Image 1: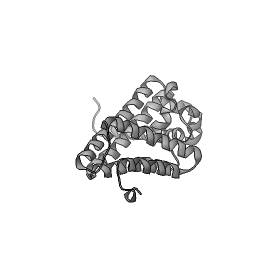
Image 2 (image 1 turned 120 degrees about the horizontal axis):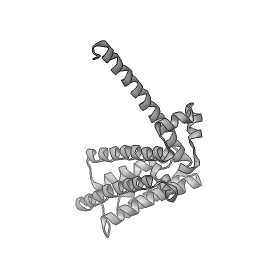
Image 3 (image 1 turned 60 degrees about the vertical axis):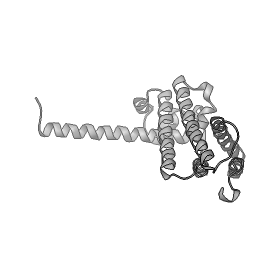
Image 4 (image 1 turned 120 degrees about the vertical axis):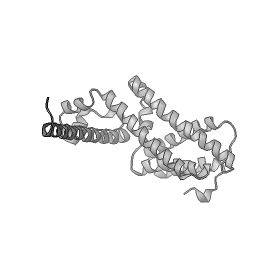
Length: 213
């Protein structure tokens, strides 16, 4: 039975190799996310990532056997990051209106970085995606709509938001409107189109225009 320094050395080697694998996977995901947000899922291949990262396509397949696996990991990572942002907004507290503004600011920040919402880009190609990716996309948007529904109900209760109808229907409308506004702003090369659309959305919730910037 092996023990002592040999085991410690082996553990360190395995940990080092695990760290390298993790680092490479993160780099692959970073590059793939940029490609999706700027080109779309079907507009890039493993060859694009391989050329950018300087590794073989065989190495890419080691980390993500097929492109669908890579896409699924992208959605999962993006949702986790988005969920963290929503949790941060909740931790800050504030009225429902403040939380809606902070939510809109997430989209504005992505657009300012010359990118589109990852899941919005993928949704545009929904019918061509593998079923697991489609299910993951549904989960992402469900998460957003559930969170917005809670915030809208909070705003209606605290008096900071005024709207008619069901909160969950308005939540669906807000997500669709923000995603669409991003797409149109990109097609016209004018971020101002997004900001104008977002401001009108907020005004429709009876928020003061002077506080929308």
